[in-house]
Image 1 (cartoon, rainbow, N blue to C red):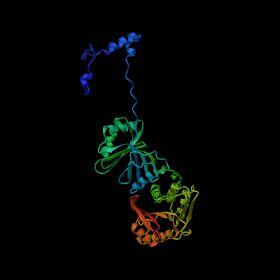
Image 2 (cartoon, rainbow, N blue to C red):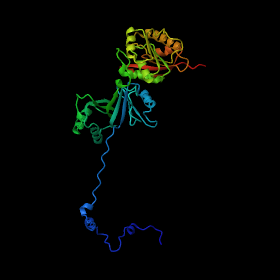
Image 3 (cartoon, rainbow, N blue to C red):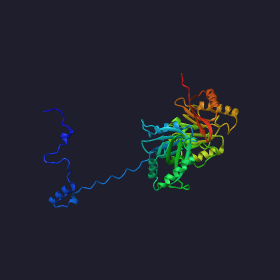
Image 4 (spheres, rainbow, N blue to C red):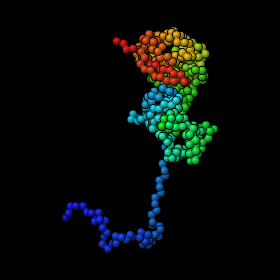
Amino acid sequence: MSSKPPHSKDRARPGPGKDPKRKPNSRKAAAKKAARSGASADAKVRTPAASKPARAVQPAGWVLRSAPGLGRTLLAELRHDRLLGADERADLLWQRNHDLLFAPRLTRVPVAHELRIAEDVLRCLAYGRYKLSDSQLDRLAQLLQGQRRRLVVTADGKHFNRHDLFRFLNRELSRRGVKLDDSAKAPLLVFCIEQAYYACIPVREADETTGRDRRQVEREGSLPPPIAAAMAFMTRPADDDTVLDPVCGSGTLLAEAGGYAPGARLIGTDQDLQAVKTARRNLKTFETAEIDHGDACALDLPTESVHLVLANLPFGKQYGDVGENRTLYSEILQEIRRVAAPKDFRAALLVSDRHLLREAAKTAGLKIVHETAIRVRGEDAVIALLHLPPTR
């Protein structure tokens, strides 16, 4: 017997007495079989199985926005909260007035006390590069079905023209049944950054973060809570910390420290009596908060009693000149050095003049370990992290 496999024509060879060119009449065969069983041929012909329902279209990812300069800090918070898997990527992009973070996947939906640094948490419905395809437009239309949205388009870079894209999307989405209305409260936000685009709907805004509804009074020039949160996050407050803001204003920095560490002792001072009243009202729900009228350069606190300092030091353009701030910074930092606990002390200071701060830190015996350049309401500023120098 040959060991070679049979040729295909051998495998397909018809049995004896069968004409290979003649196809059996399946309808007649079914009728004969049905007659033998006493049923009709039509009853025995199998109909195609019903197709499975199409899977619902899912959003394409998440978009988070922060104040300019805080994108990397927001990414660190995203990982700290374990919302981004160890091997998952996130793209950091820059808009004119925001840093934008895009994550295709999060481990879960963020809850209200997380991502305090984010100014916006948005669900990304569609994203891509260069041009919105018909399939992307169809996807958007499916996800927006039955909703009434106000279309908002922004463009950073030269690839997209904001007005042209607005007209294109308005026409194409309306043609697909999407209800777009300039008077609608809920927006459909389309961010274009160079060649990339992201179509999003808001999930949470900054003032919807846990605890921020406790603020009773706003004060002109108050630090935006997401920036205060970034400063607090950089220092990783703990429940057993004593946290000091020697120029506390309306108490925003202390409130954000309490948002991360509800058990921490919060101490605030300010030489402005109205600021003290405002901070007390804003922090009245924090049982561990103590707000007093006092001088940041002569604190009524024991030596080596503070673990963490958060402060928005006076900005030169708003308060005094360079000479006055040089003296003020030096005196405040020397007092911070006096009250600094010998172990695990850290501080985050927001300033407009990093050079003055460096001089003051050196004079006071504090070490600047990191600087983050940001913008606060259009003004350039720096968040400086300070530690005690290592002991020999």
